[in-house]
Amino acid sequence: MLLPVWNGEAFLEQAMESILRQTLSSFELIVIDDGSTDRTAVIAEKFASGDSRVHVLRRPHEGLSATLNAGIASVRGEYVARMDADDISAPDRLQKQVAYLDARPACVAVGTWIEVVDEAARHIGLKTFVTTHDEISAALLRCVSPMAHSTVVARRDVLRGAGGYDARRYPSEDLDLWFRLAESGELANLGEALLQHRRHKVAIGVCEREKMKAMALTICNEARTKRGLRPQRGTPILAGRNADARYHFECARTALIAGPRLTAVRHAAATIAAEPDRLYGYATLLACAVPKPLLRFLLDRRARYR
Image 1 (cartoon, rainbow, N blue to C red):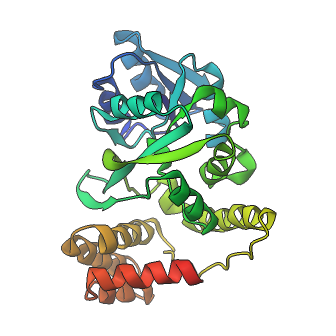
Image 2: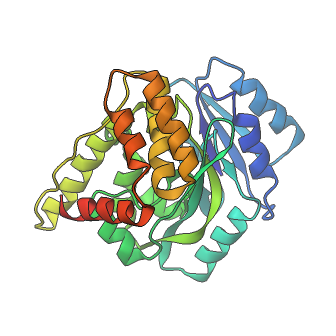
């Protein structure tokens, strides 16, 4: 299990505990500290001193791609599992994913669905993904990320053969990797949530959403061009100017589609409170009145035909 972390003291202990409680007990947990300046190293070393499965790799700060590649180079096992330092794995996560790969030699990587939670680990919504290789391949070419990065377990040798992560593709290096892994075998997702994915103000998916979407579009269109397909068009990105607005807006977006309506309303109202002079918070609150089936239909149609 690779656990990259940079200044992650707030949630690291919960993340590591969830891994060490796995029903599959035969694994190594490699915590790669990307030059943290908080108590990250102290927390990780404390776990390592009490459990021989935990190894801490401390490095100068070089970013996520370089950190993950260093971890991949040090892995000794057949499989490489991923998790972020602010997430929580279900106890049977590794057991189910490893069993899936053991039974399907053609599959090179498998992810899972995720339960999205807020900073306090309160439920926001259930995020589902397509499960079969053909569905995942089609989603990739629509510029839809079809696998939750922090849930993936991949075959070590295939991962190394693909060249690992490309830092030039940050912060969508995972999408770029899925395209390359798909050239070596099948990709899949288990149709159940085996990880809690935490939204918070400094999460990459919150604070760098605009950059992530732009890079994802570039990666997707390069793949489409190679296949003789027309490029996808980008869509406007709504993003807050401050961390509170960005955080609450991302929580509201998830809850609108995949969570409780009252949760969406609460975060939409908080978005307005954070930036009352901008319209997107009010539009999000208005969208809370649209029935979920209709909202899903409109968003799916938009994704398919933009």
